[in-house]
Length: 351
Image (cartoon, rainbow, N blue to C red; front, side, top):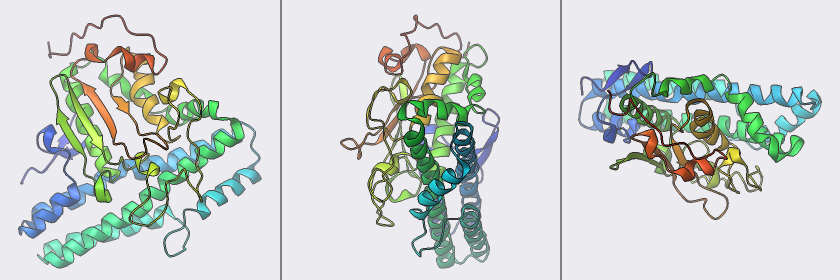
């Protein structure tokens, strides 16, 4: 496994080596297997890479939270009320021992455990390595989930203060700096075959970092079909997990008490014209479908989300089509976009 990690020029980030079909495996699981097989240097590389996978959540959640605060203040919420609302949200996000949630402290615990894992691998101490690796995963899960819940909780404040109909606008404010990144998938700039690989690889790396999948270890499903790649998350580690009870901490879905976070109660273009969508999940509709359609003429990924309450256990599923012309018309209609003229995709075959 000498080349387990490589740098991808298209994404400008390190990624795991291997075929797209191999990208669903949990990096934590692969690192643990390497330890058990005595491949300690491979394990060290994989363990360090979990920090790269986690970096998206570590950087985005504080940014999203700050931009939600700024939006609420801009729209007239009194600073004192915002502070009271955030205290209420944070009170429900206390750690299992009752201590307040602190992102920086949680991240430091995660990195410290990874450092211990690295040192134990260098000593070739398998039991200590496996123990430290699990402590790292657990520390990141506790921290990640609360950081995501803080954003969701603030979005719930927006829905109550401004009205549910403003949530799409809120996400536009949060995601505005990211929207131009969709332009790299323009078929006039990049052959679509290259974009497909990048879209699958980037999604797999990110959703492993959000600790998707059973047991929250970063396990996802990647399947190739004749016309598309299919990625399934059981659950997605960010929005998808909020629909389900937390088996590791015994807490309820975030739509239930004591959280009571809102879901869509009406049909909106920015939420797939579907009721019961988690307000955090709305960003996937915007970032994967509506904004790419507006900027490029087609979605970059098509998302089939879970819904509350009847579809709460459903796997979140993403589709990456092998040619933009293969995206079904319904994918456009459900986000309020007109069905496209039959797309010509000159870059689909790499020509």
